[in-house]
Length: 222
Image 1 (cartoon, rainbow, N blue to C red):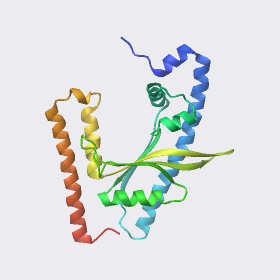
Image 2 (cartoon, rainbow, N blue to C red):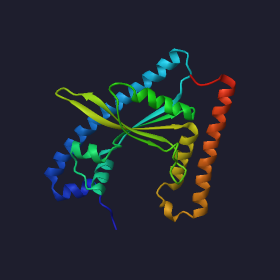
Image 3 (spheres, one colour):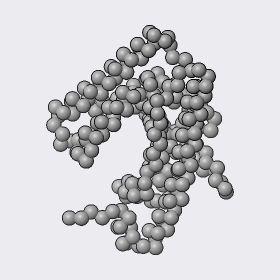
Image 4 (cartoon, one colour):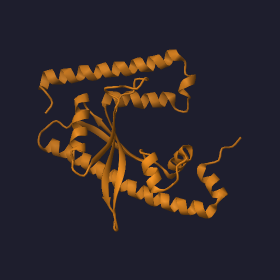
């Protein structure tokens, strides 16, 4: 049995409508690309400013990501969401995303505060999976923020998903994804799922130990 790509289904049903929707979707993605660039620039400025001031830079690396038209279309179909900016903005909040990997747990909250206190950054949603990890052990701080994008004829508030985590959290999450890739977690034996959860707890303990060692050698983070 073959599986149709969402675009194939839409074009077969109504080619002209699909072409119009695809054009609109590409324009929408351009707006999200600009919003993502705004956040990325803000993070770059923060990192460079802290380094210039002689402060310890809390940011290890940054990874921006923009969903593809195919990915957006597939998710919209699953959610029963139309391909309009208003509907997509309300129902799919991770079209534009950026992952910020920090050195220590305290740095995660410091960077989040630095970003969200900027007057043109509006915090919409915060989900703290560090204080309250997911059942599988996943830890990260998730924010949905909105930033203004100044187009030629209007200003658009663009939502961007920001994920902040430590190096250890990112290590675990990246490899956990590879282990489960194209695999239904429910069919993985409970013993192996328990091991992955235990590995997440080991990573959390490593975070605590490394931050304690850094604090004892260098004093409190500034």
